[in-house]
Length: 205
Image (cartoon, rainbow, N blue to C red; front, side, top):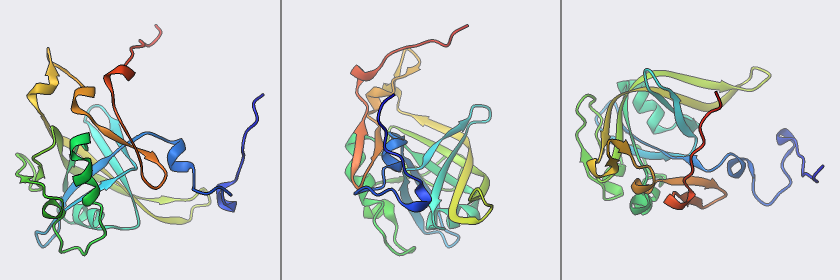
């Protein structure tokens, strides 16, 4: 049996940096576009993000505290998800800057707000993949003891999908060619996807 470091999160981890984010990693990035009730655009990356259902396709992200994105989506019932790629890494990082709600992060990051087809919220024109989403539900998290946590999970149904045609090889989406980046944990860690890491393994029958 291998030696293991054990800790109870409620009592602290006792390490230089909380390892939780690094242990559940790499994590896809929820680069979320939203529009406030007054029309101001918002763009923000969330490292707790994933896809949760096929039909209908549903994605979700978690916001630690009730941030502008949650407020906007609750008001308008719409948002976009935009793929964070290696060429857009610096722009994505700029969009996570803590700024007042009246600041448009699309402009702050030097990105183009491309009108969506089905929702009122624009998407990032520079990214090769984006989703148009309608709010399905917002959940506030609870502890095991039933106490409310200041964390909000937003789920949205994907009603529109944009894929750059150069990423469709014989009709199959080429994940590595899009150069997605993923959150690695720690204060500044990221990973990028490389074709050499790809392998196939079919489910047993």
